[in-house]
Length: 93
Image (cartoon, rainbow, N blue to C red; front, side, top):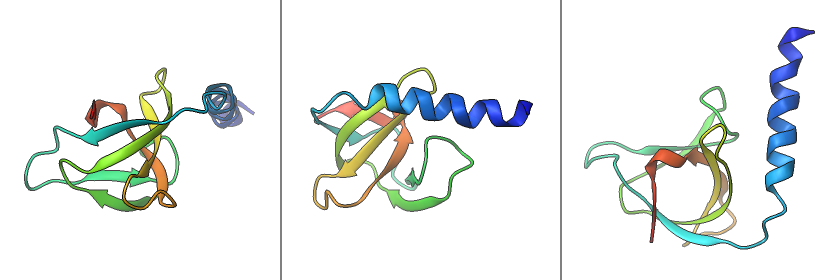
């Protein structure tokens, strides 16, 4: 029973943040020249990596869950590609 509380809490937090319909341009910062920011299938390290994003990649920030430090984004160049990244690596564009 205790293990099921975290997923339910995350779902509720994400649902409450989905009311925001605006997107904001942002870019990947702080990864360094030889590293990639991991675009994940969900908001956390336990989700599979779907894509690696180099420094400077321009994204559309769809919404963020600041309590857990993850943002749902899409690629500006390919908006159909969406996922979650750590908010620590995003900057206003």
